[in-house]
Every structure is written in C-alpha cells, then in structure tokens.
Length: 99
Image 1: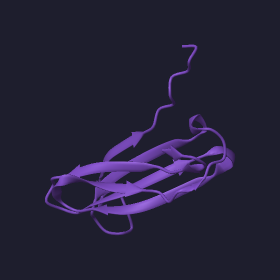
Image 2 (image 1 turned 90 degrees about the vertical axis):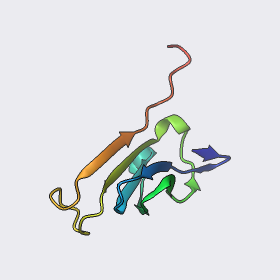
Image 3 (image 1 turned 60 degrees about the vertical axis):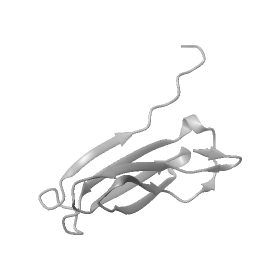
Image 4 (image 1 turned 180 degrees about the vertical axis):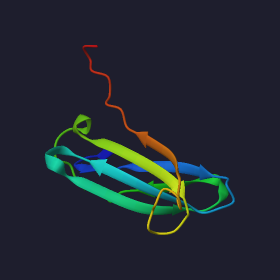
C-alpha cells in the first residue's frame, strides 16, 4: 500500500480454528530493503489484521513484493512439527499497460 511517500503492507486473516494463529508479514523493496512484522491472530469470526510500519518509499509500488504466512500457534521455535504452515500468500505485480 502507498500513500504519498509512505509504503507499507497489510494482510487480513480470519481465524475460526478455536486456537491462536501466528502471522508473519514481509515487505520486500528495492535495494534489498525488508520489513518483517510478527502478529497474533486471535480466534474469532472477524478477520484479524497484520501490518508493517509505514516507511518512506524507495521506488514505485511495482518494485515491492509482500508475503503473508499464517501458522498454527505451536511453540515459538517455529518448527514445522510444532507450528504447521497453514497459508502462504504473495503479492502479484500489477499488470503492465502494454499487456
């Protein structure tokens, strides 16, 4: 997302599992810039949000990629056996005007 000279990422996840979920949202930008945010998604019927901090833009929106991952609560070490990955979703670049 962009607003003026700020860029950030936001994701929403509905958690109806009855258990707490963990979400990691990663925003990757030009020049190897990376911002990663860890969130907890409570069990409820309404979607819970996760967002990175707003940072000064460095390039256009098409130079950024986001990845959102949701995993079971498990233990904090994040091993696959303890916290299975439930969802991974990445952003897609906007279609070009030529194509």
